[in-house]
Amino acid sequence: MKLLHLDLSTGASGDKLVGALLDLCLQRGLLDAEAFTERFRAALPTARIKIEGRKQGSLKAWHIDVAEDDPPHRRLADLKTLFEQVPGVSTPALEAALASLKLIAQAESEVHELPLEEVHFHEVGAADSVVDMLGFWLLWDELGKPRISFTPLACGHGTISCAHGVLPVPAPATAKLLCGLPTTPGAFACELTTPTGAALIRQAGQMFGAGTSGSAQTSTIAPTIRLEAIGYGVGSRDLGETPNIVQAMYGEALSDQTVLLECNLDHISPEQIGNAVSQLSADRRSFDVWQEVVFMKKQRLAIKLCLLCDKMDATALSAAIMRLTTSLGVRACPVKRTVAAREGTEEVTALGTVRFKRSALGPEFRRPEADDVARVMKEKNLSWEEAVARLLADA
Image (cartoon, rainbow, N blue to C red; front, side, top):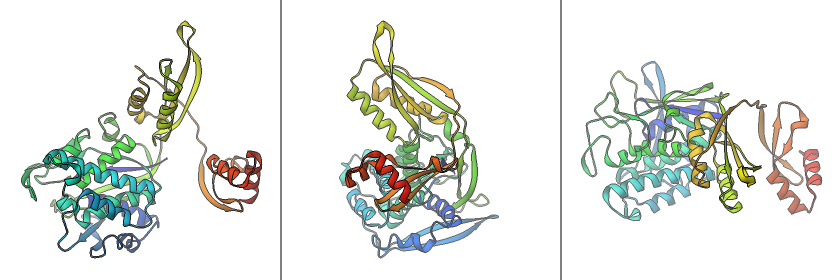
């Protein structure tokens, strides 16, 4: 499992987060700076996007500067349209970006007591925030959609001047976004975490259970990782001798702390259990989800719901199981598992483009994805065995 761990000891802002992920993508040859900026030309034809490397002490970090003359006060629907105009953005990246955007809108709506659709984004509606919010998830997608973890966010302290006047740090909307996340004031009397940065990190926390109130312990200690690259993004504010950077550590997550979560269900319908299994299976943190038939006390036939996950996600996923099933408890058992190295490929065959799983254990462990086999069966009127055999022979 690929992991992206973010050091937010000098706060989180859109330019720093995007710069750090861009650095990782540049190092790995996934795209270049020009290819990144070109993605936004259609949606922001008048914006000027400048990417440059800046020295921060002995480090080189990347900075994203976006300028737009007389930016309009855009609403949520306006920004959503701009996001959708950027070409080549995957569905997961676009959904995460729109969710990050909606988090800001909801925070502004609550702070200013306005309907969601009437919220004006002011500074957050400028082109730089469009590039920051969509750019972060676009680069995350380029890196292979890694799991995200992070340290507590440094917020800063003091006051800040903005479109709403002089406000305390963190500003009210930022403070709303930070609720449930581990934070620290930090050492500087200025705004270290912006609304855009807070929304991106909150969305990451909701997607991966990193640093949320349900599993805050996962963000205070860097997870075990086999490092492949370290990226640095720098912000605009000068913090003197302290580098104003986000450090992004990228690599393979190493953990033998697998947990098996279980609960026995004899009080809800098969339909509700099926819905719970579907939702838990779709959760990125679940390794596997299954059901077993068991006999409980008084010889009641029941279903044992089982979920395999990393130890750091056990608390959040236990809460999800109880919410979806109304179970009053979940058992957590540490287990050992051996995982063979594998990769996913997408290959063109005579029966269409099909995804395959390949294992380092040998050719007999190579097989097409079940969903693609089912599609080929339906399209070509084949049995399961015939579809698999032809796909293996042709790939």
